[in-house]
Amino acid sequence: MTFWIITSAMALVIAATLALVLLRTRATASPAAAFDMQVYRDQLKDVERDLERGVIDAADANRVRTEISRRILAADTQMQAARSGGGQSGPVSLAMAVVLGVTLIGGSLMLYRSLGAPGYGDLGLERRIELAEVMHESRPSQAEAVASMPASPNQQEISDEYRTLMERLRETVKDRPEDLKGQMLLARNEAAMGNFQAAATAQVDVLRLKGQTATAADYAEYATMLVLAAGGYVSPEAEQVLNRILAEDPENGPARYYSGLMMAQTGRPDLAFRIWNALLRDGPPDAPWIGPVRAQIEDTARRAGVEFMLPSLPGPSAADVAAASDMNEADRTEMIRGMVQGLSDRLATEGGTPPEWARLIGALGVLGETEQAQAIYANAQQVFAGDDEALSLIEQAAGQAGLGQ
Image 1 (cartoon, one colour):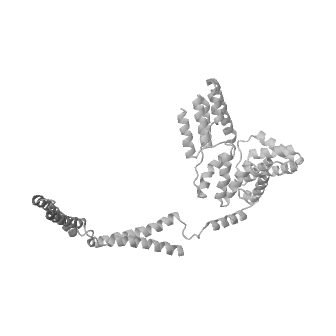
Image 2 (spheres, rainbow, N blue to C red):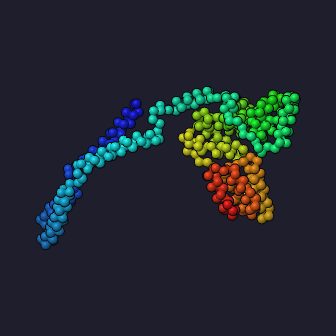
């Protein structure tokens, strides 16, 4: 209520000030012609003084008096016209003042209704941090998150032969629970089928069997399976695994990415941005977590109140450019083909951002590999179906490469 009282009082004071300016009668103010007449009268006095001192003769004095008198008559005519007009009338000024007040106060309320949150309590920084801590502590467990997930659709693309092999693998591992290779194979193939909860269960046995020899990468695979099983949600159980990874390997890319994701999910976009910004700078640019970071960091920065511009994708290094300048045309082309093939292989296996797909299509077009560029273009249209911004960028690259739509 205090907020509404203060804002309403401020709006009323501003509206009243502007209304007083409108209502102030213009008749009380001297018109510009009155000032001109005063100047002309002073000039007449100066003419008389100059004549008495002998600065000018009588003929010049008469000529100057005539010119000044003509100007006085013109100024008097203008002044009389201004006074007879009287400026805008009182009712018109009053109406304008009322309209201005209603527009100012009503417009302010409508703007706040659109952009603000009526009835919402004050959310200072300390209060927001407190709410984020509550959200962090009270968020659902891994089991609750998995239980809330919709049933996985049938995977029609998996062949019957592969399903049969998976059933045999599951039975074999069940009969041989201490078989490390079997557990690793089961975890990898369950994840490949999209059965991430089953993959996480198998990865637990992998970690158990490896014991002290389990690496941060092994735990990172487990954390990834937990997050994917929960539909991208970082649960408290996943957080514990991430903390263990970062304690052993502070530079672990997947763990840093998921830690930032957890901060974003629990009301701390400031910390998420800090983690992801450092991760983006550290690279490498072809790391699998760079694409997801680039896709989310701008929105996260906006929520954190940070002005941030996503850096452009890096091109060839200085060493690559220097090496290419010393090559003949054939070797240079071969080098470029190798770089393009590397980018193509990475996008095919790990995916990438729309600018990377566009860059690949453009590079293939420059090399004259239009057939492969057309295939990549068709693949990119499927990958980014529904993303108008990404499709626009890719179509632009395809057009520059001379590809058909």
